[in-house]
Length: 442
Ligand code: ADP
Ligand code: MG
Image (cartoon, rainbow, N blue to C red; front, top):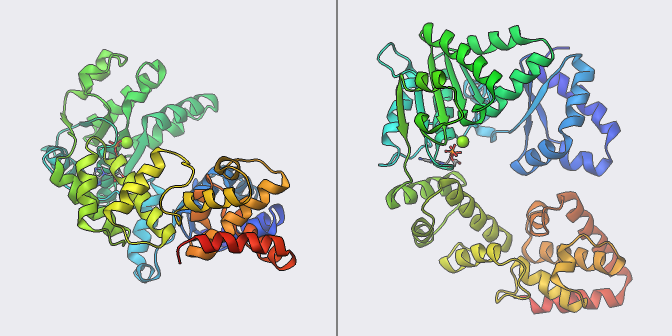
């Protein structure tokens, strides 16, 4: 069999026989085989929601199916398919698929990295490492910081850049390196393991602290390091602390790390935080008013991942309500996360509001609706709440699923259909639903 596309089509044929029809059409339809390099298989999916679901719940089925078709081990990765206009440029498309095969997040590029006082040095050193123009580079480059400050982003940007410069990057986390090493020992494939890492023009090891104290892995890494270093290849390492405070690491490895340059990343100042928020909002193509960004940048100081996570939450919340993102809405979105499931908040149209209202009418509690109870009353009330949300705001099925504690889009879809049918057959139910809808703002 040949192309990724064909292999995937065959795999879909098999998968279709193994999962339910609705499951198939919710999760597998619209997926596509993008690339296959004899080892990793890249599947294009329409959105993150589907990607996360497949990753979490269907990975083993998919891998098993692929192995059945190509008769060798394969590891699957999922990638969001690019918008149509991007695809017209097949060179860019190839590069992107390519970099995803290497394990790089397409967002983690230098272009998307906001430079500020806290990371200027690290950024400059990273740009240098990606060129590997000659001896003038620091080798190894060792980047350390607290979590969530951009280490992974920066070193993956090196990887993207390296590919553009026709250099071969190998990116691995300390954890993955350890796992692969152990598997190679077990399966007597240490030669293959050695070859993979020694083929790198640039070796990037993210979160090296993970291997500290794992003696055999450290030993193996020590040799890999020496071979690459002697061959003049660039090595880039990240860690949550500087080399000298890695007590578990063997002395000889620690001293190697001090040969090159160790730079830290400090938490961003206010201006950088604001710039990061602006850039993230732009990337999601959402209008967020400047006072909202300002407010968030003032409050969240220590962790960019958290900053980004909260912004995403505010955006998702506004989408669910079909509302503009104002400071009031942002405060509420963030508060609703913190204080879970308060009975009936002021905004009756918020997801929590709808759930509270439905619970009242059905003589249940919000916790019943959000819980996993399956008795008929509770199940119906839950479905009504999903139905009302869908009608009221035309929120996406997946957003509603998320509001109900991470239920599947297909569950929500089924609920909406079921209630539409039940209403047609029952006066009482229809009256209840109308009562709820009347209490919601138009
Ligand atoms: P670390 O590896 O240090 O824990 P990450 O690289 O995973 O941190 O960064 C966390 C999140 O913050 C990522 O989504 C990343 O894109 C974002 N981020 C961090 N620093 C910056 C920056 N300077 N500009 C833009 N985004 C950033
Ligand atoms: Mg990281």
